[in-house]
Image (cartoon, rainbow, N blue to C red; front, side):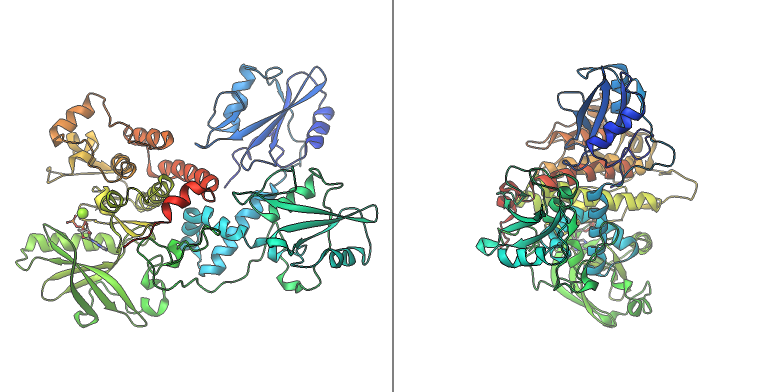
Length: 611
Ligand code: ADP
Ligand code: MG
């Protein structure tokens, strides 16, 4: 995540309090002289350091759940810059107003945040190596799964660090620390024999000190009474900067003699992570869990989108790409009798498509046998649109098959439509699960916006699930490609339209744009957060139009987080673009994913399995 303060001339990045005070001293100690630095304790937070009456004041700026920033007890601001602007006009509880920025001396760049760069690099390397992804597929995996991947890494990352000595006894640790030079701050981390806890062993004044590392109920690590961290390596990195209760800070790694030099990572720039084989977890429940989800290791058994066969296109394999054509051979397609769904056009059947190297499960949209030309043309239009799309959060088309009838062959999303899925599993699906899925939908919509397509039929019924944690946008029957210079599509005549999902502009002027897709996204959000209820209750289309024209909007669904209701309302202003929506829901999703993933709240609900 980019640093929101990186561009500010008075931002110093990750520097210690004493260093901040040095800079303020050098700049003259006038009242209201201030600078901004990164907070080492809370990720994403800052500290405002300032001077008043020749004294230093340090105020922690916390990043809140909804992505805003605030000094404890103060007003929330959308960024650190806005916050500083505010306090330059109004002291509002600070020692005085911010009067003069203490800018970085020329040539001094903000100190990179130890954790941020380490986390980002680790996540990237881990995803690249574990799932063998590159390019867009890699980027999308990182954006959509960063919190889960961080959890995976958190449990194992320290094992790759040169200061980690594994399970060695206390006297062996002392032997290793006493061998060779014994500078103050020479340290190692070891696993203790007792119930898998850890200990830090540290040299100071030629003596070795041992500190127990505690792990609390939510899995966070700390030195007794010390700051808590999600991971052991974060704890170590922090203690390199601050003693935080230790007799001395950690200064010099005592390298593990058993760790091959090649395995040693070089954080923060390129930490190496073990290459895992793709995590093939065998047959899965439709809810994305292996048959035995483990309560003690949340996240470990969770199936990520990248673990499924539909994350990347089947044609991402160059061998398969050789055979890619719009029209598929009938004898490569096996059609099952099982019907997945139905519509005006005909029905959707389950099937298997034989490719060069593999067989894939497919969903086949079969046109009714009496196909008239216009209906056929419509399906071909839908196929032409889908043919141009390739994104993990969009149902991909494999191709078209013209045989007993015209058929559109797609990737299989066996979890079915989102509204049905949620209404049948109210008690099992948590709010954070819904946020996760809606974030994925926003990623798919952002991709459509970038490719200059309008969907025109985004609704919970057209979001299909691969599993409980993986959603894809489908049904491109009404979708249009916009002209290169157009920002909207204008329909000549009104058709059979899903009015409850449409912005007034669509209905009044027949104009369809990314902004009207955002409106539909808001309604889809409402459906999702109300567990698949029908929007606008018993109202008919025309009633909804006048309801909206009066400035009224649907109420907040029961238990829906306030941040998510605010986002829906913003979607219903016709001002927002997909990428803004994606950004907002992403930060909210990250903030709750980090906070609750380990907690009992999410696990209780999401543990449930499917029949
Ligand atoms: P319509 O244009 O009639 O709304 P859809 O494309 O939405 O058609 O498909 C209708 C139904 O068929 C869906 O609600 C879903 O149950 C099923 N279906 C469609 N595509 C898939 C797919 N790729 N995987 C699984 N089921 C699908
Ligand atoms: Mg549909």
